[in-house]
Amino acid sequence: MRFLLASDSFKHALPAAEACRAMAGGLEDGCAEANIRQVPLADGGEGTAALLAQQAGGKLLPETVLDPLGKPVSAAWGWCGRRRTA
Image (cartoon, rainbow, N blue to C red):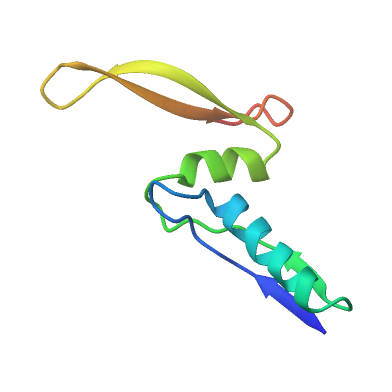
C-alpha cells in the first residue's frame, strides 16, 4: 500500500519533516508492506525558510536584523552554496 505524507509543522511542537517522520514510524509499525513517501510542506509561515533551505540542499544562516521599530532581532536566511541561491 502506498502512502504520501505531506504535513506542515505543528507550531512550537514539531517541524514539518519531524511530523512526517513520526507519521511514517506509526505507519511502518502498523503496516509492514507500506510504501511511504514523505514530503514536508510549509504554508509560508514559521518554518518555511528552513524547509526551503533543506529541500534545496542548503542551510539557514543566522543574522541580526532590525524590526519595523528599528530594534535588533534575531532572524535567519537560507543559502544554497551549490546553486549560489539565497
